Length: 222
Image 1 (cartoon, one colour):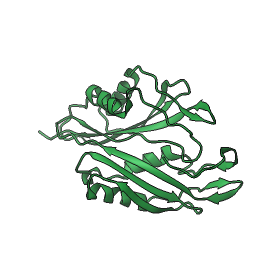
Image 2: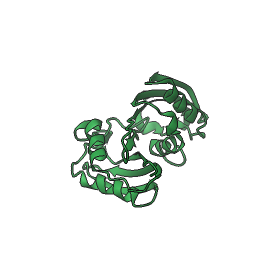
Image 3: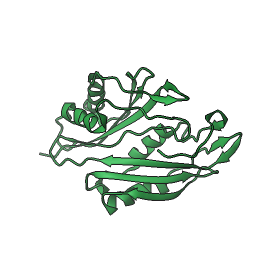
Image 4: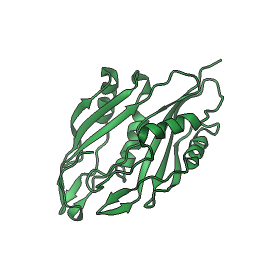
């Protein structure tokens, strides 16, 4: 994530719905129409949170297909206002670069996994790191998550969790549940990973950070 050069001591971070990028991440995943995401690939979007909290200067820097890019733009354009970032009490613009990765799997009872993203736009110096990288993390979830055997079950399961200062995971919360134990199963998979993450760093010290993990369940009808 790209940001302005600022002194964290003088800055109040931009907020969305009382939170930061974790809350905005939830909004993005709740609003995306995944039927418009027809191909696997990566989309990188950039935008500005201006001095009155509006999202402006939306740009797609990288995309796999036009339909997916258009859907990202649509969701960003309709987003509610942020509370703008402030430096020494005065609002200022914050530029954000945000990657989205989509994996489409046509096999029955499988999941579509999207990037968990929650980096702070102004004061988190280093991102948290996943053991083995995102590819191995997604692979682990796909191989260990067992979707409920419910014909016609379709939708998103969304769970958030905290990466602690020591790299352990905790504070699992269900944001969206399709029932039939679908969200509890995702939490079970996350708890079973066993490996510690490298935590995010702020002002040279490890800090807690929150991630939101959505998966898509699409089980064919009989």
